[in-house]
Length: 70
Image (cartoon, rainbow, N blue to C red; front, side, top):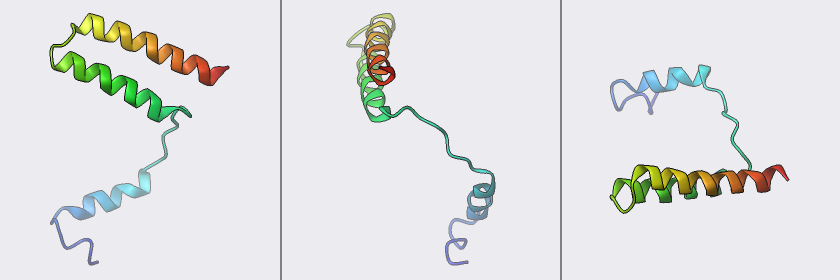
């Protein structure tokens, strides 16, 4: 009850926990996130074009996943 006092709509979040399910992620999720975020930051700051950033991200992400699959 104490947690449901603030904010007023907090019950919405607590009620959705019944339906929440874990989402599987790759064993190297942290590495994947680091690669993705680094390239997105470069794209968003206009340091590279979206095409360049995504191409390089794809290469690194594919290599990272290949190491997990090996």
